[in-house]
Image (tube, rainbow, N blue to C red; front, side, top):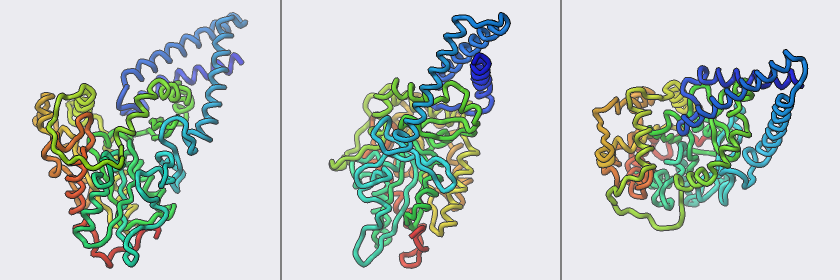
Length: 438
């Protein structure tokens, strides 16, 4: 038992020392300092435990402190096993209303697909009014165009209702431009990055969901750091977390355990559970299309904008260009393999189009390189992305006051702008490719 305990603790210390070298951009966008402090504390504790075990080995007999440490290790491993069983059967791999709102399924390659838990009308947890797997709804004698929208909370929706939510408004604009009934399959999941969108596309195609075009929405503000090199997005406690791809680091780093992630969920449960509802809300209220100026800048909004500006455009930017570029290329290739058009839509950081907010925070487009992310997307997008920026030039009126999500007015303006450009890129009705999987 002493040798086993010493080996486990030694591996934990090694993982703590190795992880910062293996993960070039770390694991977290937010709370990185707290994570680093906790990791340091865990490393100090592991080193101290190894000294105790070494002292026992030299004396060739156990002591009370060593026995207590071994007992604590056994208790921890039992707790980890119980959480693994609970998480893997009910919370994060099942549909039980426990923990957070997310769950995992698998794409055809066996990789984790991030979904919301089932809700009325959508077993896959999408914010839609009809299950995309149940068949298209439209005029009895006309099969509608089915546009598959992939992306994060910008797609899932910050509008109050379908009439003021970007994908649904875009689909209505396509219908108006083409004269053909059009349906938005809203497969957006708050927090999803480009890699998550790719897995969602493969997952839905494998399940036989039919669509006539793929519309992927990239949000510059956070999509370049949602999927980081050498990490994978997984669901634990019903919430999304990053984990190292390295089996050794996932197994032995104390902060990568389910116990640590469940503890983080419990400690921040109130905040974490409110975020998805705030980021992607929908009710039956009427759209609020009044253009409201920016009031007092909330501290949370200021912190978010400053942090993202520094990350994306500051003197030491941190972006996963290689991961994003590969995902965008594979998304396009996947759509081509399915025989459907692919449209890349790009939404800018709020600070890039909201001059009032920039002025209040003392930010300037002359600082750093505010074109770096958009320039990269243009290089990767082939036919050229649909840039939503022109629809948002009124700035603050296009956004909610508390964060960087679109207001109802912003959703409508962006939806109409994007929809008109999607229509230009679709084949004429009747000459389009067969729907994927249909």
